[in-house]
Image 1 (spheres, rainbow, N blue to C red):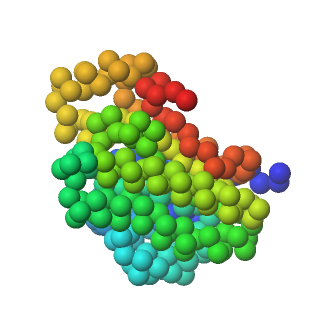
Image 2 (cartoon, rainbow, N blue to C red):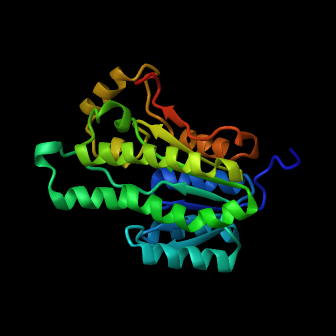
Length: 249
């Protein structure tokens, strides 16, 4: 293997304005990538752009809309080149269980968490196949393996579907040098944990996690860069658990 670096690779990170997305953007830039940040909100991405400079680009895009995804993808290719690494990280959380899940909520969660990943994968795979190199990394969740300890029905189903999409992409693209993997994190230190839960709720969760702490965003980003590495080319169709021992299989 002649090239073990990500230097010069073009990456797309969806949900780039969130805590986990920002950590991934910074980690990929440190690896030498040019990173196209994609999010429905411009503000958080602008702050990252100011800090990291010309290595990153800002693309406001509603990933539920295939036309917006196609437009953002075309803009990225025109500005830089074909996409080498796709990180499907954007997502929304829903805590409603089956009887309280409305049709509107169901469709919204599936549209963001699943449709967006499909649309972006459809955009980037032709060039990846042609160049016989590519990495697709999807953000799953512990909820897909447990039925949702605290997460709701729509969210758990959407993340289960992300796992199935990962398997399908991995099988279809392996012969072209393109890998597809997912990461299934649990309780990353994001506003959902630090702000939406009170101290008693956080302590109750920590008692269930064998390592006794929450996952740092940088730890999630580290797994992304590992899966993006040229040295990870023999890993495909995997869902990597990142849960501190909360669930083992």
